[in-house]
Image 1: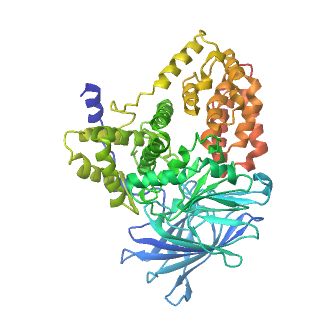
Image 2: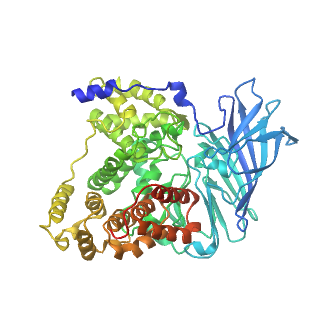
Amino acid sequence: MRLATLLALAAITLPYSAAEAAQDPYSYAEPDKVRVRHAELDLALDFPARVIAGTVTLDLDWRDARASALNLDTRDLAIERVEALDEAGHARALSYTLAAPDPELGSRLGIAAPGRPARVRIAYRTAPTASGLQWLDRQQTADKQAPFLFSQSQSIHARSWIPLQDTPAVRFSYAARVRAAQGITVLMSALRQPVQGDVQRFDQPQPIPSYLMAIAAGALAEQATSKRAAVWAEPSQVAAAAREFGDIEAMMRTTEQLYGPYRWGRYDMLVLPPSFPFGGMENPEMTFLTPTVIAGDKSLVSVVAHELAHSWSGNLVTSATWRDIWLNEGFTTYVENRIVEAVYGKTQADEEFVVAAGELKHKMPSLSENQQRLAPVPREVGADDALTDVAYVKGAWFLRFLEARFGRVVFDAYLRDYFDHFAFQSITTEQMLDYLRANLVDRHPGKVDWDQVEQWVYAPGLPESATLPAVPAFTAIDTARAAFLHGTLGAAALPGGDWNTHEWLYFLDHLPEAPTLVQVQALDAAWSLSRSSNAEIGMRWLPRAVRAGDHEVWPAARAYMLRIGRMKLTLPVYRAFAGSAQGLAYAEAAYAAHKAEYHPLTQRAIEKVLREAHAQPVADAAR
């Protein structure tokens, strides 16, 4: 073992105990005293007022005989009354206090609960500005038929539309009754039940964490892709979405063969309006997807494979705190890559992972040492900020390392047992490591040293054991890119016509962050990159063209960032504009005119980019 590795391992000291790591600093709940086991929602959607109003009834499991209070998480909720329900359904009022709001955590709802009632009902209303909801006018949808509502509860935004224990440590089943205007279809992260009059009903019999609570409503159509899967979207989009995601049944069967049965009944997908801030959200029975993954050639369906993989890693076995989120995202990214390999071939799977690893290596220097750890120091990383490429890609890379050391047959069997052992539980990194040591490392001695495992999990950066598969096509692309940058190969002579999407992404990822204006103009003239309909290509190309000083691409870049609300894709374009005074003014004007079309989470992220740009010197407009 190299001296550098030995020194790195010696430097791994944990400034927190396992007990401290298991505490969720982003919730007011006290699940060691009382836990929610089931929730019943009775809600009405008011589109003109942009409000959800109704009740939630919580079934409680009191764990501490001395406890006499229930603490719940809320954000900007109006609490109208709180009641205890007896076995006959009779209600008695309970006193409560709503604490002053914390900017990140919201307000603690403290309910005095003498006698430790088994059921508590809360009547409440959401705010029009709820951080976990986006309300869209009819004109902001694709078909312009009806208004639209969708939620995004991850990470700690469920509390903005339901008062509950908003921590992944607590899992609960739920049922819901939802009333909406005629012509509005409601969907939730649950199984749809027969409609009764103006009431749409849902049932989620499996215990889920609060961040998987989801609701959407609008003028929607459905198209089946198999007996247990379907695509939902606005009517004009549903056929294209069903074609793009037609391989979902093959993906499901592949994953079942590897890791055990799919345990959620149905796997439906909902294509949301472009303002959805993420690529996808793994809500059980109803995965939410951005329309940016509909490329027309299935080149971006790894997003669907990723969300499906969450049905095992994340939804079935859940991280207990946001500090442990790599247990969700790292495992899922690994499983996603295995699905892609099985359905689309090893070449595509290897190319996708190498591209993702390149993005991680590029971003790693901008992260603090704590953010570079799979299991960072608790409280030093915000709940939303924990969802970085480290959790996704470094986590998957660690599992690839284990697979290489133990062999795929052994590691697949281990992972299947892991999902079975921890099914429907929320666990910490330390629980996962205890299981790993007992059931893999100790059973196969000589394959992996435990200090190597700890370096992957607790040390910043990437260890020396982080290797990547060889991709011959990428080697040839490296040669062609170098020749182009040195001026010995013209842009039109690049063999780009033979490259698939991921090969183009690799080519673009390894261009300079700010190529010369001549290089940018030559590439665009030859390959029309600024007009690409592929959003991933746009995210890589447009910022480089803006930084190179190509004002001809500004209208295309502006249209791109206004058309796409997915933060991963639109924020790099805003950052590129923010690098010059003229560009910053241009981006601010575009944002001001279209702010309402972005999700609240995206608004907050864009405003942070613009605010930080004003706080530091920018290049002059004549760059």
